[in-house]
Length: 301
Image (cartoon, rainbow, N blue to C red):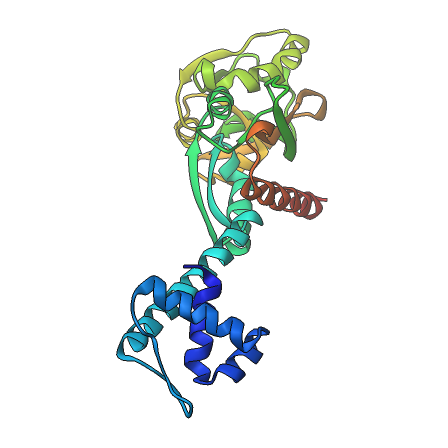
């Protein structure tokens, strides 16, 4: 049994007239009669009562009509779903992201994805950059929002966000009133940092600046989460260097001040994916991510 036979049956059931049904289908009457005869032979039932004056559905034909309509609708739904999947409009996407991305591009990106691809299921997993690189290699995630500290020729890379670093200070700190801070002014401060596996990027960004300032930062405490870091700054335990977007964490007792321009490197966020595992959904994601990044850059001037 194929779709053409079902369509022929349903059309005849609606018209109850071989000539009119054949005209709707664009076939000859003998060809339609042959299709119906094959279908009845396949099912081993009589679907239509035929006389010289009329064509009518049998009881078996009435039952089969309901099921045939359901099957044809399901076929159309399956075909439409396949077409949406081929266009990247339906499916599942697993996204890795570094901890800082919820403060900048991630909320806008997820909001736009939800609007434009409502039938794509998003799975978000927070990971440091090194973990994302491994997850991309193994296929555990489809795309990563991470720092550009990898060298994988098989990866595609799309710039998403750039920003300066700022200093998070206790509100009562003597430097809290300064318009900008030179890194050398932090020589005697104790720094709150993330563990080594998480701070590899920021250390690399600041290495040259600390060398010019002539000191290495003293670590007061290592913590896993940025909000914990900022909370400890508010408690007076030390200072912290964070991307500017993190200053949206408006915690009591914390002041954010910009670094002097020559002392402030740029923090970059990129989308990365394995070119060997590109899918229609991933390509739609990348188009939306690029548009979101361009819109955000325009808003920031």
